[in-house]
Structures are given as C-alpha cells and as structure tokens.
Image 1 (cartoon, rainbow, N blue to C red):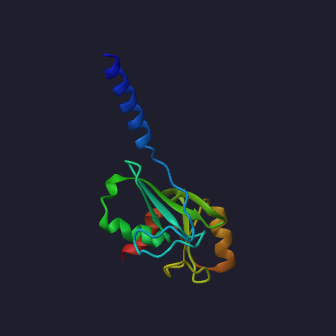
Image 2: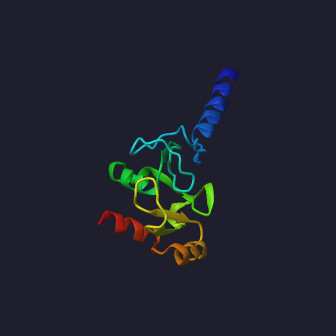
Image 3: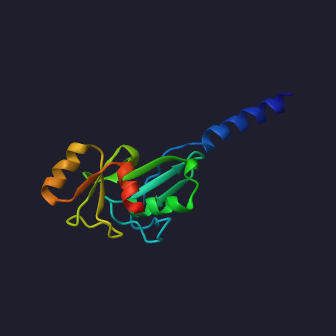
Length: 145
C-alpha cells in the first residue's frame, strides 16, 4: 500500500512538472526557427508558440509563426508570443499586441513586421518610421490575403 502511495505522488509530480505551459528563453545565435530553419539572431522580432501541453516552437519572426499556423492544429496552441520591439528579448502576448508594418524597420523575413506591447509605443514608432498599424486579428487577415 505504501508503494502505491509513493507511485501516486510521483505520478502527480511528473504530471505537474511536465505540463508547464510557459515560454522558454530564446538562445539567440543558436536556436533555430521552427518554420524557416534560420538561426534566430534578431532580438526584437523573434516569436514563440506554446502548446496546451507545454511544447515550445521558436521562430525568427512573427511572420514565420503565422505561416507555421497554416500547418498546425491551432486549437492546440495556448500562447502566441512575439518580441516587444521596444524591449529586445521580452516576449509579449501577440494576441494583445499592436503590430506595425513599416518598410523603415527591417525584419528577418522581409515582412517589416514589429510587435508592440502597447498601442502608444506603436503609434510613437509609426510617427517616426511610417507604416500601418494592425491588431492581431487584422494582421492575420492581412497576411492571409
């Protein structure tokens, strides 16, 4: 009976720790993009997807993450994350971000796409660099056209 109790505790601990649904730190210069296979080096344009089971997919650009969604069951995705343009290496919730497409801000895959945690920062950068602002939903529709 004691052994059964130990197995139950161990099983619960394994379940708890194996279902950690959180982003992973990107190792710039060594981690590769899951979609295009390029090495992730740009600290302001990288992105991640975290599944409901805790598996992490890393991308060198938000547009790679969006293209990856075409070949993946999106009902399995828990988190969509993009780097915050104003805070390099900081991942933000892409579904709540404001996006700027500006030809004056190159991105790794040539979409000129940058993510911002808040709309005010996006508007400030837009006033300096030009371009168009998008919500997550608007961006998905724009890139699918």
